[in-house]
Structure formats: structure tokens, C-alpha cells
Length: 311
DNA sequence: CGGAGTAAAAGGCACTT
DNA sequence: AAGTGACTTTTACTCCG
Image (tube, rainbow, N blue to C red; front, side, top):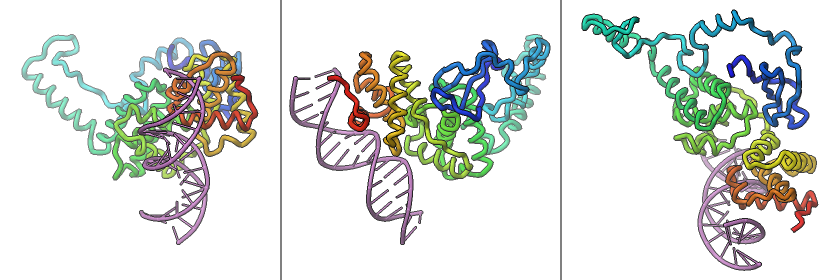
């Protein structure tokens, strides 16, 4: 599936199902899909206005032949040419010792031109870290690019001084998840980062403050759908869990509580009352919280929403 | 083992000095 | 920038069926 078939877009109005605002346009199937809950929101998106058009085959070819895509992920945006390490000419023949030496000089010069100063070195380290962590977490390219953009901006604003590259790149990655409403726990990032969770936590707040990046409150429902799927719960159970979240929100029971623990609690209740019970340890592990917190949250919900678990 | 509960420590947040 | 206080979460442990 090529990148022109799938595009992540941010629309003004939220998804009626989960309230998310980020959607995926799948041009191959001509559908608009909510990224939060997977609901198909529009069937025939070819009618969706001028921001999208179908490229002719010719245009597609031209675009794909014009070199590597310009991305944020490579520190020089992929524009500087590289010189092959192999001592071969274009036909694959070995080079004479004379031209070998010339190639050596050329490589050396190209290299030093590529990474000119500390700033670029810093950027390429950070970007490779962002890439590494994203791969381990299975985060899409779009998020890596947003994270890289945030990091680049942080360097330009001179915010890195006194902070570790590790901490800030992890923080940028977490921020990218937050701004795209991708449900990830800070702990997950910390698990694949060389930086400590606490540093990442401080780092992302620091960046959002200094760069003026708005932190919208996390949507519990996104976590419910994600964890629900990972726990292999039926769609019916997940829907029940989402209803519980909505009720809890109406009763003002969620503010100040981690969306992770709310998600864990409603999933536990819904699963149990639907005969798909999961153990507290299983849910707690999946949702990156402890069983104690899960108990506290779910008991509170059962009490305040007057639920009956029937056992 | 799964669930319930507890005390103490740690962490995050709003607010002040 | 450090301090305070109310609050949530974690840690570590015990007890029960």
C-alpha cells in the first residue's frame, strides 16, 4: 500500500462515535475512517472537495522517480547525495588506486559537509532515536515526522541546552502522540527510551510550554478502544465500556484521574459483566497501571454509577 | 492464583511566595 | 525557583477463598 493511498487528516468536527478529530483517508477503498475507533465515517470520499485529486499514472510515476521523498526524519531532509562506500564505478568495475584515492577524498569532504556542526550531529542523533523508538512502538511515519519537526524546532529555539538528546527526543515523540491523539502511555515511551520516565515527563511539558504546543486533554475513549482490542474483547464489550466512560464523564468522575486508569476500569467492568472476564493483572499490565489503581477506580465507578457486577 | 485491602512513599498539579 | 497542600498512583505487603 503506497503512501498516496492513505492519508491522515485532521478535521474540525469530532467522530460521533469516539469524538476523535483525526481521520484516515483510505483512497484505495475510498473511505474516511476514524483513527480512534475504526468507524467508517464516509463511504465515497472522492467527492470530498478540492484538497484531494487522483494522480494520473504518469504523474504518479514522475513523483515516484524524483528521488527520495522529502521527509523530516532524515536530518538534512534527504537532500544531500551520498557516495557509495564500495570502490566501484557506475558499471560495477573496481576503481584504479588513483581514482580510489580521489573517491576517498570526495567521501571525506561530502561527509564533513553533511554533518557540518554540532547542531546537525545533534539532529541526526535525535532523529535516529525517534526512528528507533517509533519502530519499536509501531508508530506510523506521520508521527515520527511530527516528532522530528518538534525536535528541530526545539533546537532552533535553543531549548536543548542543558537537556539530554535522549530526554528531549523521547519527549518530542510523546508530544507527537499527544497532538495527534494517538493513545500511548508515557511509560511505553520510557520503556524503549534511554531516558527515565520522569525526565521525559518533564521534557514534554517543557517543550509544550516553550513551543506553545497546545495539549488537549486525552480522550479516554481512544484508550478504551485500543486496549479493548489488545485484550481481545468483543466489539460489544468495548461499546459497553465506552458507554461507561460517557456516563462517568457526565457524573464528573474522570477529572484528575489518569485516562489510563479510567480505561482500565471500564474495560474490567464491561468485560466481566459481559462474560469475557479478564483478570485485574492482565488489564493492569496492558494499560500500564497497577492492579491497585485498577481496583480503586473500578470500585469507585461501581459505587457512583450504581452498577452491579452480579457476583 | 485472583481478588481485596492497607500504609507509606512518590509523583504530578495548582497555586503561592 | 522553591515550597505547600490536596490528590492520584505506585510499592510492598498481608489476608482470604
